[in-house]
Image (tube, rainbow over all chains, first blue to last red; front, side, top):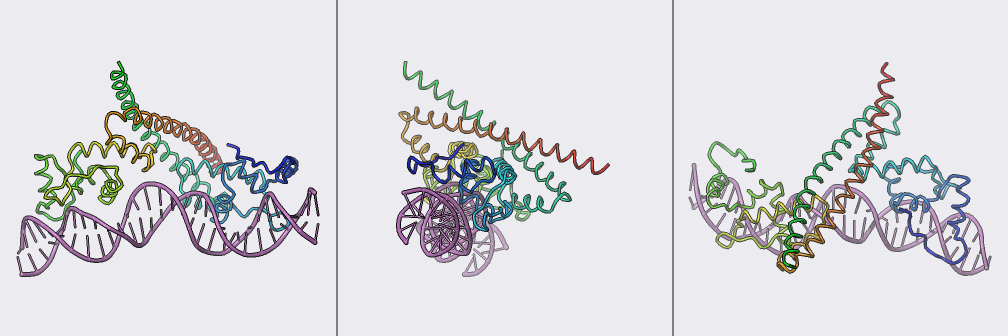
Length: 148
Length: 148
DNA sequence: TCTTGACTTAGAGCGCACTCTAAGTTGTAG
DNA sequence: CTACAACTTAGAGTGCGCTCTAAGTCAAGA
């Protein structure tokens, strides 16, 4: 789950030093968030551009610094994606979230839809798996017969 | 099992007449296969072009006529796709199938990989679903509190 | 004969979700 | 001062899996 840390020399890289500091300040660079979440830095910026992530605070008005709240939201986004929600739907969800408490019912409805979709998807996978398992068993039978 | 018959007027369409004939001859047109399988005619031709389906026999050397064996294979392809196999992998699988019995072990290996992938996918979905279900419940609690 | 509808092909186009590039800025170590 | 790593942006490019278009053939019904 943790990204590959490239070896740039024997000394600690700036990134590693930042990481040590950040265990105190709790604010992560985009690179660190990429490593932590599994998303690429490109994808993190892309998600922000398209409005899935609110504009991240900048240190000195330039470099992004992610808070633990930001990370929490990103990790939730990842779950929504992996469960089958499209980027478009996630944009809607993020927009509703930004609008505040009055949109809670709408968001719950979206989550319910997603839940049902995912449950149906699991059902479908299970059914297809049955046939695939059956095929495997049958072919393995044929193979062991030919062997003897 | 028989696809949806579109109403194009009160007289029987050519397609319907073909369908009646085909219950005798057991050979289906591309349109009928599309209705039966849920794939589009475009996709059926695409699958044939890229080698997922062997070249279908033609009536009078022009129009495709699908046998029940063809349908069986197509329905299996659909299951592979829905279980997460890529077009590329399916091309490999189809190629192995064409090469005959000596490739059986390879095909079984591919199916085992697919099985494991799909099982892992289901696991992942289940875990994400837990969190989504939890969120739904929590938010519904908040909503009913606000109501009272 | 004309129209209609189902089919044919080669190849272009599309939507999605990234993924990468080019050109530039910033900050620290040596 | 220089080098370098890490960051920044706008916008172009990619891979997948279709999906559609244009131009044409063919057969049957009015």
